[in-house]
Length: 133
Image (cartoon, helix red, strand yellow):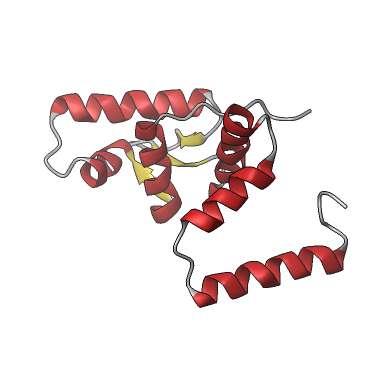
């Protein structure tokens, strides 16, 4: 069964980015990273964001110790794919090609990035994993 699309506001994505970068963190550590001058209200905000992310299955809480420690329950790549698919649905009737074409044309890709994209496409074609033939 396919996972339903994730609704992740920017504030929740910011928490996930910290967890992807650091691996494991307490709510206080996350608050310090996100809001260096953290107030009590910002601590409460981070705790609420963590609760929401936990409900969505995006964060896992280790309740064995105090303070509780949090880790990402979803990988960066999974979120990227999910968000791109949602964007393609909204803007391109689900088609990824126009979305990707515009991203490549609009971006300033270095020679190394272009080479990497060509190699990825070649690998997909050679392995038979190309999604559309």
